[in-house]
Amino acid sequence: MRLDPAPHDTAPSPLYDAVTGLPNRDLFLDRLTMALHGGERTGDATAVVLVRVDSADIALDGPPVADIEPVLQGIAERLLGAVRSFDSVGRLDTRTFAILFQGRMDEEMLRILARRVLFELSPPVQLRLRQYFIMARLGGTTAEPGFDNPEALMERAADALLEAERPESELFVFHDIDNAAVPHPS
Image (cartoon, rainbow, N blue to C red; front, side, top):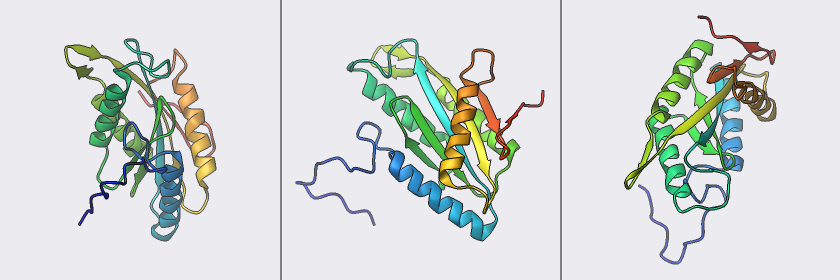
């Protein structure tokens, strides 16, 4: 049973993003830490995908504009719709979201999930009579149970995201545990 907050409790939670309601960086890292510990017990891999969004129609990290918040909320809803019920989505900064995939996971499964995320983000966000086209780049990696810590995993995913943001790169770049980019087989 879910309890509604008391009427006087209107302050935003320090663990959730005020705009999207998604876990913020601290809560996402806590969930990642718990997933890595769980993976040590079960032998399941943990994967992180960072999603950097942009729009030619609106500056997502520029000065406040009335439509920014609904666009970001629409992006958050789509990301939640793209993942499985036991995965987590968080907002790390203005334009960067993170997805924590848990359970049986390998590179091919992660690529399938990344394609699903890109598919969910591909239609424009519709606000009133205006459409906002969202562009996304993804960088991801998997952790081997017992060999990774949250910081190393996030750093590897960030490196993959930086590579994905290069103009000649694919929309999703995967880095393996050796920190090397793994090209997608054609």
